[in-house]
Length: 363
Image (cartoon, rainbow, N blue to C red; front, side):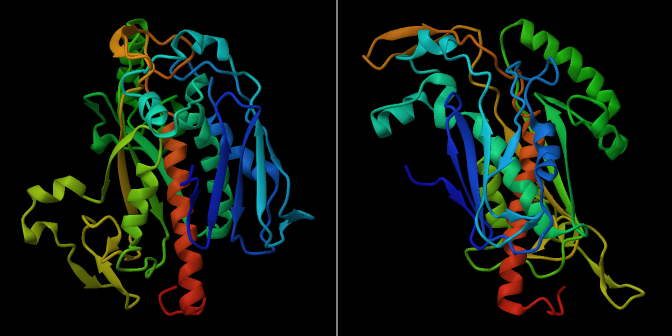
């Protein structure tokens, strides 16, 4: 199975299955002498950890991370950093009834068709459990980026219910279980998801992640554009079905004069953009503005509502998935989206320095 690694200079590889003994990753390309300890990573893992509210899966995983290599006396050495998280609350028996059946909307059929074998316990390698290691790698990426670049994420839509962008307050994000910047929307979503869970169903969501303080010049045209790598990073997250940068699909509704981000000269002699429809990226290269990325997550495929399907023997069946699942997997995708944005930016920052040097005029 290929495709378990991501990145060029800052590169990480994940391994492990949902119900295996552990999951882990190896992060390569990290410069030496960066301060790094397990609590630096644990802080971000705790934000993604399951079982923190009734609106996420009740699987109780502490997600305690261990650093096995690449750090000495509290500093990175430049060697590969190996990270490990043990699985302690897997209940494989919950999946025994569907081991030969294909859940509609899940990867069961395609894994079986491609490899002739699949780990049906929690989805195996296709499980969102893998994203814990993305968050761990993202924590290391934040160390590479430094304090000058901040990355924040928020849930802006569940089902058809969108936030009121005029009510956006970043301080609200940490005050509710949805990472929602609109207190009114968070209250509505609590009622909405309570009803959805009772009905044995699920809903999709839209997440927005924003990076501020990004220097001008990150991105490698033509095929390694910054926005191209961001799109791939977000699309690689489990259940993501769409990505947009800046105005995104909305740009198709704008005229040329409205879409173009006009410029003026600031008091410091640097360009000032009057809007940000480009989402901080032009020609695949960062402009210095906030980088804005949104991605859509489909409804959780594992639901109690019976659905028609087939099994691997060719029989038609009705399937209902028991076990512990998120009524909206998009909630825990917020810290994952932040991590993937950090990883892409760290990779491109290192590539930028490698080809132009840290004293380049664009930094």
